[in-house]
Image 1 (cartoon, rainbow, N blue to C red):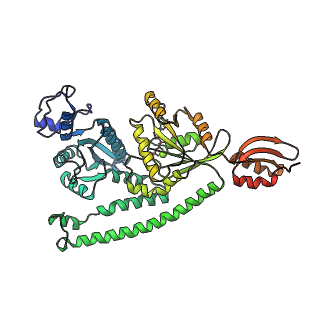
Image 2 (cartoon, helix red, strand yellow):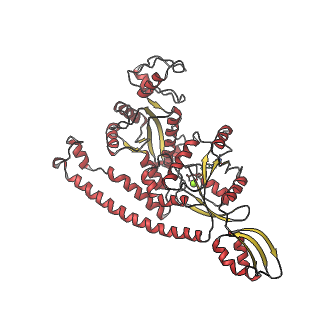
Image 3 (cartoon, rainbow, N blue to C red):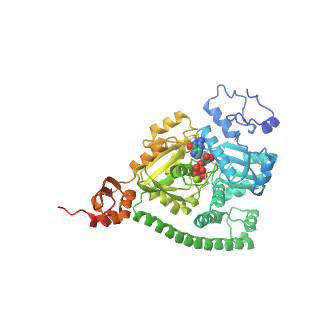
Length: 496
Ligand SMILES: Nc1nc2c(ncn2[C@@H]2O[C@H](COP(=O)(O)OP(=O)(O)OP(=O)(O)O)[C@@H](O)[C@H]2O)c(=O)[nH]1
Ligand SMILES: [Mg+2]
């Protein structure tokens, strides 16, 4: 399609080119010369200028349901949303991916995505996130599409949220609130629920609004505060704040107690020297699928973000018969809200204290490298840098072979698998076996047949080098951990 030269204002505002994702949509300001051949010669500057001025509509984002019954079924939580992103750096593709991920998040939260637009800017507008002119256009899109919520692809300041809401006249939420909402919907365990609630309160605290605030805004807002702006509403907010703070303190204590319970369990596992493997990775990468494939555990797998919020720990066995634990973890996401990282820190510490991390990445995703980097950032954040890592490139069945090759080349310690088809799983199991810490003490013991349980323990917890069944018992040569070596010490054959 050749772009029309200077389309009329009406065409500019309402023509939709959903299929041409690179085409800036017709929402530009009047001053933009859009007469250039889009596919023809345009230098970078022009491109930039056009992009800066345009709210670029991202194609294929609409998840408007065709089946009416499905709409009704979802009606309860259904919000009709328009997504908006500010694109400050990176390529068009990056910007599109980011908005596509926001769409997936919104859907996971139960919303219906009607439209998505991106504005090119050096940085978000301090007042309204997108520029004020663009905010007006966004208002038109909201009206036209019948949306009841705008979702911004970032964390907005309390002020930005208020100002943008004033313009678009529907609820405005940001990426952080959306992720918090999903976590709140998905948390099952008491601890998970408490962690999410804490994070939500933390997020809410500076964003509390009552009519005290609108009052102060009416009275000129922004400036000095002072007695004049201090209405009864503000006092109410102060009371609310205090109540929330008290609740948060209580919640923190509860979480700390629950953590103690989990720590005990972990210590128990450590005492038995069962090596632990943590499966970490970006949300929807296939962590739970992999856990199921490796252990046959029935863990919830869903094509939704953050299907897993409560860490599941399963027992597994290497091909050589050594036991280890395998833990599924909460998925990561770019710009994971800071409050959540804090709230889930204790859960994520599991990753930090494991003996090996299986870092799962979706090989069929458009930007797997970005996902790897985002996850590593959080791993660094929780101080889990010393744990050896195997990069497990999953969904090899669906991935572009060239992308797989690229990842294998860059990631030294990596393997391509498919949790779905089972491809590469055998090899992964062997890799895990190689990477798990070796028990350090070499022993040679003669275990009487009456102590069969000990022989079984050596098999499970150590590595058997040789085993002979003699008249007096089982002659074992093996490598075991110190504690088991101490238990076995009495059975060392006496030197002749
Ligand atoms: N094609 C393909 N799809 C896969 C594979 N592994 C998982 N999936 C799909 O990817 C989606 C996410 O899988 P999960 O195992 O729930 O992913 P997860 O990493 O546990 O996700 P969260 O718990 O939400 O963070 C599901 O729809 C799976 O069916 C695979 O090897 N190939
Ligand atoms: Mg999962």
